[in-house]
Image 1 (cartoon, rainbow, N blue to C red):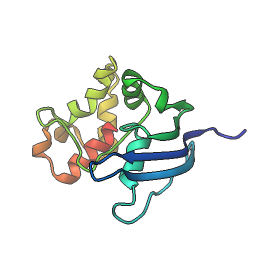
Image 2: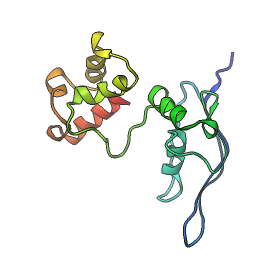
Image 3: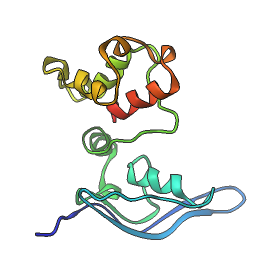
Image 4: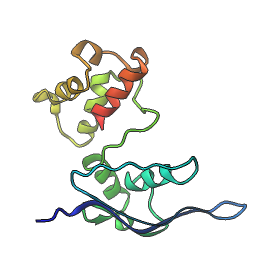
Length: 160
């Protein structure tokens, strides 16, 4: 039995309207990513890699074409559905880790679960996620400004 693609782009185009004229960042991109498949997106600066990742991460929607995540077309979703998709289906690690500086590392990982009205602390899930990236309980009690860049990155990975 063949896996269905978890991500599928069909002739995706992204155009940014600017006063000096429209800029086409993606022009008819088609791509299928199957469950368990790993890909690399490579290219020179300014070629549209970040725009493509923003599309796949549902942070932005295509100007035209179809983008399906788990067979759901993001162009047909409203803001609430897109937010739910991002919370439940997509893990995204930003270049800047976007950790909340007032929360501890533990709380930063726990926060998305709280937004979904789940309580992972009852099963130790957050502690296990942090341990899986090398953040022990002592480091988990620290706030992001107290952690090294590498430690912050690992917290962001655990949160994703």
